Length: 194
Length: 194
DNA sequence: CGGGCTTTGTCAACATTGATGACCAGGGTA
DNA sequence: TACCCTGGTCATCAATGTTGACAAAGCCCG
Image 1 (cartoon, rainbow over the protein chains, first blue to last red):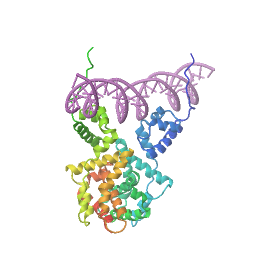
Image 2 (image 1 turned 135 degrees about the vertical axis):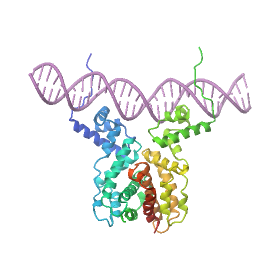
Image 3 (image 1 turned 90 degrees about the horizontal axis):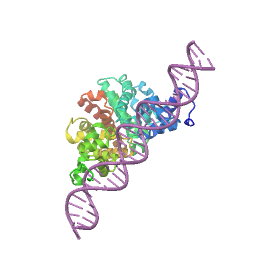
């Protein structure tokens, strides 16, 4: 009897395969959400067996977290002057139609929000918001209740982000971006001052 | 040969069984989230066969929507005077430790947010926010950009709600509620005025 | 060269999930 | 009694995430 026929795939260093899976997952999860994308779909796109996905990342949830926690670069506007910072931050979050790093970070954060009833996802979301929004602000704010105000600003930013990318409020999506910057920026400024 | 033995359950009118499933689902989904709760768990709690759940509600997602779209009473504060409305709204959303109707509505809305990568859930979430937050405000606001401002306030409220009940920001949860009311209320007021 | 060891990949299963369809029983009505 | 609508049960389906046994390629050391 002949030996079993196997569809072998040329061996590659672990880092290469891992990156292929990571990239495929990033693309799929960001566009279609956590549970619309199966492990087998990620594996197919990466040209890999489904079991390898688990082997390399432990679980689907872990893969999701690693794929969505890309960059998330610090918002450099938060290091500028306090006057007008409200509008500057909103402009940073709401504009940039496709300027690579920022836009990806925003949609990735939105994907975290949408999948946040997974316990581990919720934890990552909390830490990300703390690191990217709240903590940089705490160091800048003056006056009383600085920590509370920073976290309330983070809540405002999260609200704007989810309204546009999770809820997809049609009024906000159709509105003039500069009007949003002015209005919402001034509301944020209210918490920056005093 | 004897006939097949069946664990029959006393027949009940459809409305009764349906309500039992609805209540069980409401309790479980609100506490543990959409995909931590299986259809069989809901059925067990309702004392019912799993197939009946689908029979009565069509799908798990539909059951989730019907179970989470309870009451959601209009926020009566939005019909009061414009001065001080910002703080009044925040107080309405953030306080009430367990005053029945309101607290349930808030956590149910949070459950919708957490499950919002299901397409139908997202649609319901959008409509709920429009009906409960944005639309009542549009009718009250004066001055230019009333519609935009109303939806931005809705974004602020969604942000506060998700920060406390989805992200569960420890700073906000530990903070003095009245300080949140004052600070965040004034930031909302900024969008109510002018 | 050759035998072991680790690394990389494949496949066949597993348990659980949401969902479906066939069937059955009770009860009212004609 | 015969009928049929309604409410309920069970077996089963396809798909999911995950696991473990196994195969083959590369590498090290003799």
